[in-house]
Length: 65
Image (tube, rainbow, N blue to C red; front, side, top):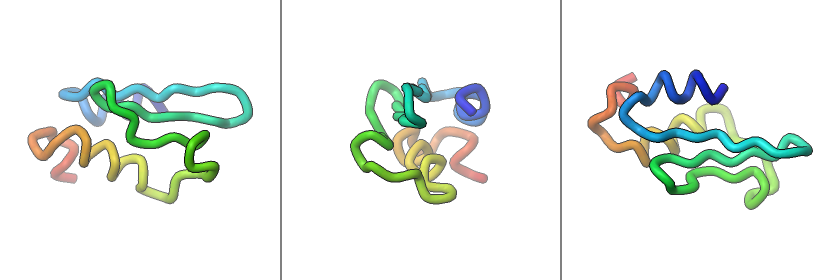
């Protein structure tokens, strides 16, 4: 999943940080955009992509999908 996110957003520093128990966090350009640990829930379908697009800015190719 992390490689897919990096490939989809080549102009942004997208990081998927995994830990034990299925907990994960997503950072874009050094800013946390989603944390399962903080929200205590799974992301909704499409939520992480939407958050990444919002953080990566409108000039990234993936925002036009």
